[in-house]
Length: 101
Image 1 (cartoon, one colour):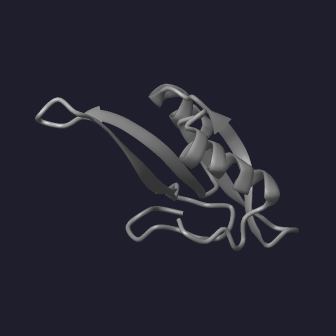
Image 2: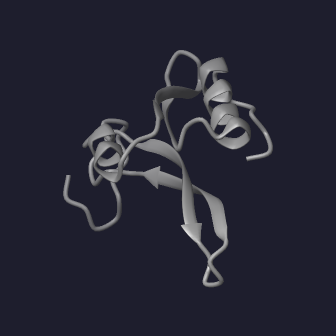
């Protein structure tokens, strides 16, 4: 994510904490109707279960997660995952192909 255009100030700060300071492992963003961009919803060191619980059943979200793992040689690695959460039925009027309204 080289550009922060369309992000609220809180979102930019959370992304900085994730990328540069590595204080947190997860940032969840939602589309802000009034701001017209992405707004911070959740930031923190969430477990897998907490991330799943934080995602609404009827609205899309953008999740940025810092994944720590070991390479086959045993070296510690970090990678950022970008997850677009699109539930089967969204209040925004979007439905995924093959989903039932």
